[in-house]
Length: 75
Image (cartoon, rainbow, N blue to C red; front, side, top):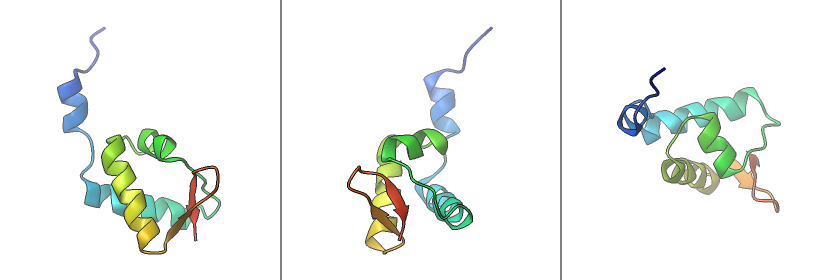
């Protein structure tokens, strides 16, 4: 069985704006959502750096806060 190449995986990753909308929607639908940046990147199949940027943007906007353990939760 053939596995996808890294290029194929990268082509299917979402753009940061798309990820921003998806992350915001997920946190709105599940107020108790509690994810680290690594967990979020895996959940949304997002490049880790792009995911960290999205989470930081939502944190700066006051939509998310970071816990002492480093997880992001809805403000």
